[in-house]
Image (cartoon, rainbow, N blue to C red; front, side, top):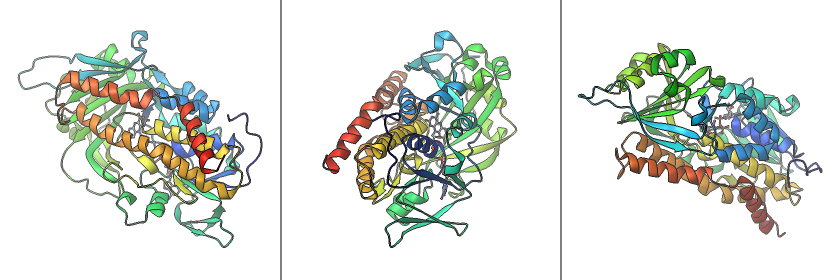
Length: 435
Ligand code: FAD
């Protein structure tokens, strides 16, 4: 079934908790398949931070399945490598470090990783602004922070929000991110997967005007995506905002605990970043010098130590980061969120799914179809992040091995047919529903 073919409105109501990339793409996909939905978002409005996010080919396929409008929104705000000769380049990988006796003024590329779509970065907030236009206001409820869920005598799920209000639905899908309340409700508050864990990496994020970046490191490096590798730290850059802005993410690994696990960001300064990158080469230092004097540092948490044992329980389910929050080193976390939305929408829109009694089978199928891929991404992302920092066991600073690992793992993420994934999921659902 495709989004155009489903015509009958379903005899059940679905609640989506959380309106980030996962919740919104799912809402759009379901709304246009005539599945009745309401989104409950804790914030007063939908919003994303002003950083960049890039998408791999699987994510772009999934956008098209969710709804062509999602893909059009992406194309509208997407920025690719600026040089035509780099149109298929995902990242140029550079030796970003300069040892004590190293006199080099620049760092050369040690290998290049290609991708069918090259690099395509979007400014998160602009992408979100575009996809929000596809969501009718009357299905959105703001200021609704989910506290708990109970069941009513007539078998409806009752969501209790922190403002004291309640709302009912036949099924609840938690797209409520890395600290998901719905995940805690599914696995229990004391289960290890109820909370994410710190990966001992943190990241400074910055945006710089492209003209300043070009003045600092030259056109080739500023206008095209680069990964500057080095010991225990790596800096990635790609153009966003139609080439007017350079997006920078500077990662650092250390063994210190994160000061406050309740807060995933802390304040820092440009000086802190420069200190963390001591010994790195001139390009890296010039880029860091373009950041603002006051910076936010983002702790990289994930579900790698304690993956949830299931993504669903009865008519409760989780998708997106709520299910498989990952470190960002494959640049594929949001892409997997959109894949989830495509698969979930195709399952719920299946003609066999017509009444509340079918929803448990939908969510069990979703778990069976999505869990292995979600867990792979989380583990592989940790490993590849360590490769960029010359700390992966058996890989170290061997550039040929790092390149081979990236190619192998990127292929598992990108070289898939998301349409076939959806078809397979629907056929498995058919078995559960005795088709
Ligand atoms: P979120 O964006 O966290 O959205 C969750 C929503 O739920 C929020 O709106 C929140 O307010 C709401 N919410 C939470 N709790 C409640 C509650 N109790 N009640 C009601 N609402 C609630 N991925 C890529 O594909 N490519 C990249 O280049 C990339 N770069 C990244 C760089 C960094 C530094 C990081 C940290 C991540 C990166 N990712 C990337 C991963 C990507 O950002 C995430 O996978 C994605 O944004 C998660 O979307 P989500 O909708 O699942 O969760």
